[in-house]
Length: 549
Image 1 (cartoon, rainbow, N blue to C red):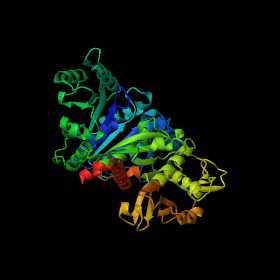
Image 2: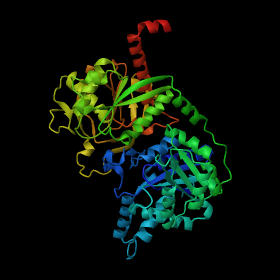
Image 3: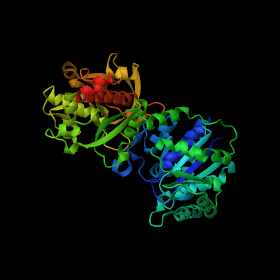
Image 4: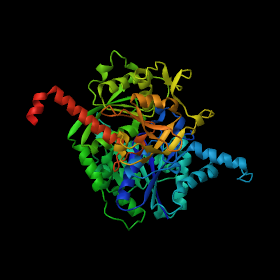
């Protein structure tokens, strides 16, 4: 039978419950245990698919096509395993299921209530992944903050499960904040005390406290927290700020978080943690041998979490190349033909990110043109690929009115058009082309060299596609379709063979990049950016280059 670890948070949001959960899971996995993580979000949206990225960060898509919370990206990046629809549950999905059952008459005329019907459905979902004996430990992260009205049913479900399960089958970890007051020059434990008190009032008492802090916790302070929060002193874990989230598993191992959980869960058979590959990655990340500057063009640059998977993919690819990747945010709304050279000249590579809507589109097209004409390594994802197609159509094929029907439904040259199966869809939620699809690669192309095999599988989230009616014109002029869907003929990858590195993909490669398996296109993109940077250095400093030789 699977064991259960519940992770709750208090004091404030954004403390890093997802990172703590993923780090603990990584440590348990490194000790030979089969582990997975699930996220329970208290919002009433059925999934985050219709949420603006400014509201909730990026929408992460799983292999089976579920639109989920971005924390599932952390789970996959840390554990190097796939998650699914079952790993992310919202209040909206819970209520939708219960209401549908009520309409079917499943409750035999009973009054449907939060307790027991909503909490029973939450408990069923919490234990769903543990029914097939696929996992030894299931970690459940409860979204939101203790005390929020919307979180109450989830906390109540945890309380009931604690009562129903054998004592050694569940552990509750509570993540809190120990703020440092500069005026008083000391750390304050009162917010943590209040948070634990609030959780206890709801019937759940934490077994372990993980304390986020800017300053080290003294033994005296740990003893005070343990005493007033009624936990063992060794169960007060310091979670100090670190330069990168990938150091958190190492710091949690140093604090003994995994061993405390194993002891409380009465798991006696486990190995010494194998983190050799993880530490090798950290060494490359901490001590790069070179540096490149990548321009990121997107719509939601003000919120870092809007492009979380892309930013993490750059970290993975940078470490693989032993190269520090500096990301420069470029607002496409302010790019024009007159200033594009000034804005992009210092870059070693350009990535045009995914997005929806017309805002900033013309600036992206201008930026793509600059990259194409100046040999700047270019990588376009989803909308980024579509912008490359439109730019090529306008400035090489001479189709001056070429556009996407997303931005201009009346364009006379719809080189990007709505997918046929999308034309009759009116409902927005969960209706895009979602999840993993195969892609066949042409031999001898950049895409084939990057992946090293004829067929790949990547995840999608889009409604518009390359219009195959124009494919002959494009290939005749030098832009080829190097990757296509074998069943539908959908163009998945475009590239310019005459360019040092110019590639656009309809899918979202960033969703499958992990610490142990960095995404190949990102790796080769950074490699190309390094070569471009070195070439610039040679041109600027020919004497220095000759001295090096």
